[in-house]
Length: 427
Image 1 (tube, rainbow, N blue to C red):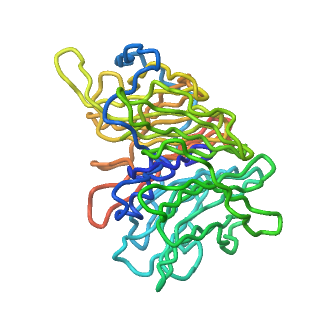
Image 2 (cartoon, rainbow, N blue to C red; image 1 turned 90 degrees about the horizontal axis):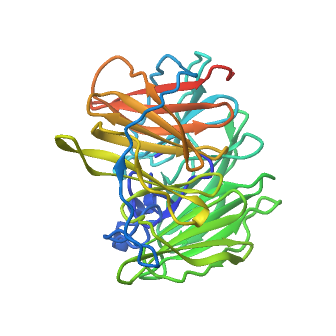
């Protein structure tokens, strides 16, 4: 679930907020029968190359290159009130960690809440407060994304009755406060979206609107200089099957669409400035039921948990596969090696890095970092005192060079801890 910049995907399936743009939509629109889960959806069988090449083999990655260049800070223990449902983390360029969460559909009032603190200042957490006291019921979609000026931009879902009006609201966090929310998109049915800021700070949201029936329509809507949001621009779909959609920070949108064929086939398209630069390129990869993240360099990172065989037993492992700029994917690797894995989270940053954190059966917590499709390092994360810690979220930052992991204990009420690490020369 995960912090982040150019890595939020629109997915037509919901998977704890990690799969993509429409993942969170699955939670918002259960009545849509799992249609557009725009974070991770794929076919039940592995896709093969268009030329009939055999499927790639997945082999455990045994070697580990643990990096001692980072320093790990003392754990932070935030208090999250009211009780959270979905939680995300974000790091800004001032070295502050932000926690955002929503509450259960059975809780009132239903706002998106926010609290923040410096990761290495020892200062107190800000009092939890709503991002906006908006009418109706609000729920979190994805992690806020940074702009070039250091602001954090958040797009969230809002439902207003009695006409069941669904809308996407957007606000920015600057100088310790949130701006007034703006309506980026309105719909009469189920809608989800993801926002991006380009290098000049202009905002655009990629929207998935499932209010038209059995299929979903994809739009891009840009924020104008006067603070209003332009008329949505439609993005034509070639295949009306589960799709993963990721916006980038250059105003483009990346689509990964399944087609009803035998064997199953995945097609990649890149839309920008109202036209397709790449359209329906066959790709020998699978995204259905898997988590996806588009990094800042345009590479799609696919991660999932599955069984693998090691000497003497079969274990649950983490798989990672990288699809470089829409080209054919690299062979899947198993960064967890020969250690069984209990859970994992992912994140990316503005420098083109991607990160996976996982908890091994022994309780050890690991953090792997890739730049593009190349793994840079694997780090051992110190755990706070206590036991039964579970991973909830991850944030990765390029400026400063840092990462934070949110952990939770299975107690009632739950206890939370943040473990942050940074390069030794980071502020």
